[in-house]
Length: 338
Image 1: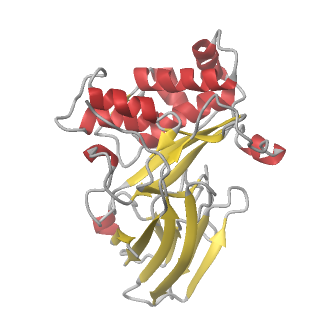
Image 2: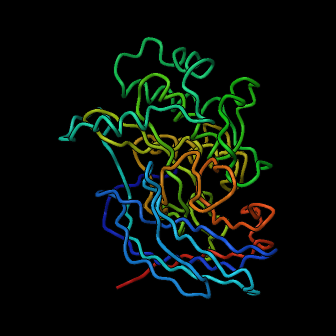
């Protein structure tokens, strides 16, 4: 027997700290802030910072509302450093899909934003053809969303060799038939398929901050050092339910990584996670933003696919955010108790 059943049961308080000391002549940096707000599962708190930057300011992307600390050091600053501390409250989510609740309709602008194609999330061609085949015969949006979720769980797999969280190039995945990757790939596949058939959906980029209360080693942070604990989740908008949590990528993570690893799809742990992760997720994770193809303000580089890692830039371009030891940044998370 295995239990994985997140339900709201009270708010938890976390303090997240990001300390950057970028190398290789970098004099600009951008740090995602956990200021995404959702009334039922995340409440942002205070944000403070210290360091020797010439400029440090909170800025917000106008399209997606992604908030960040934009930092710039003097050109002759030999040892740049910035440390950002943010407090945030989070709790478990559980949405009763199919049981109509009093949920205001999604505004037209937000609907269009979350149906739009992006560079890596096309909504036509192979993506649309694939989605239409998956949902054929399904009459309502909830049934269509569930069918897409089950298809992604059944047809993808987590690839431990994928760098970071992946990229999310879903056309390449479908065209080649190589439906592997990590969370930014597998959950983006769900989002793109959903958008292509008229279901508003979005990736939610964030970071794990605490162990799983259900004992799932693969679904929580193992220590206060969360430098490599980034995780992308997904949501789909369903009438009568609102934004509904969906995370097929974490089901595949349980299959691959949950001890003793390489579990069968029929394993009780996989079954428990699969049943819960359409409609629920655990509040040991904090959201940063829902931004795709983001152009960082003040950067001379092209946009990035998503904004889940600190970024820094020197004359040659971006430092590698997937190499925190060389980049020199550290992220920590600590739960605050009253």
